Amino acid sequence: SVVFSGLFTGATSDASLTAEGGAAVLFANIVTLGQNVNLDVATTRLGATASIDTTSAGAAASGGDITFGGALRATTDGSQGIVLNAGTDGGVVVTGAAGSTRLAGFTVIAANLSTQGVRSAFIDSTVVAAATYAGLLDTSGAGGIGLHGAGTHTLSGGATTTGTGGFTADGAGLLSINTAALTLDGAFDRTGGATNLGAGISTTGDAVSFGGDVTVSSD
Image (tube, rainbow, N blue to C red; front, side):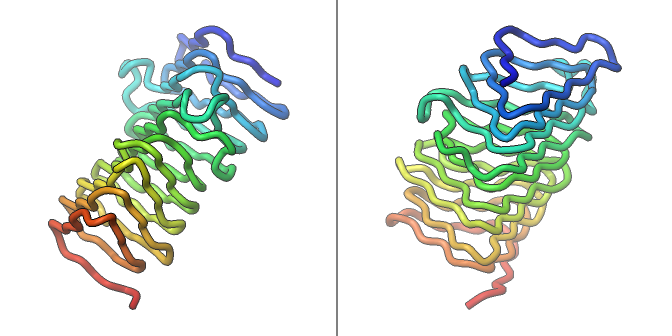
């Protein structure tokens, strides 16, 4: 295993990070100055709530890519979360299925996001270009799911929220809900851009609202 027990800072513009092996454990933050972070391991486990920031707190606003080669999970269910900031040009990729232990939070700021399923207390995603969610988005807290930014958001695996969590999408880009339904324990609130609705939306008596054009592509 590769264990990050203290702050890792790539202070120069050519300092990227690649970790390989069976597993990685994050107890602290990782910061680079516009360079990529690649955790090419089967599982990345959070030993504490941590962040990976390839903009160095905005000093390199365009950022760099953040890649997880496998699953991303907490150590204790619902106790450790992650914040991923890849900047205005960088992408975030999570290639593994949802981790077996739920995250306390999953927050992304990036140009692009590609992920399989995510299990977290809440999900908050802001993209400039495009986000694709191939697996189930599963949240357990009141924060639910929030999708933001100018980019498109495409869901192919559906979403489930509990704990009164809702679903908010307020960006200008197209929201596509493909093939798998949303089952929500809170409201569905779509403001901003258009929506392509290819699957159903159900709530526990909460409102479903659309502020833009809606195209229904499924019965």
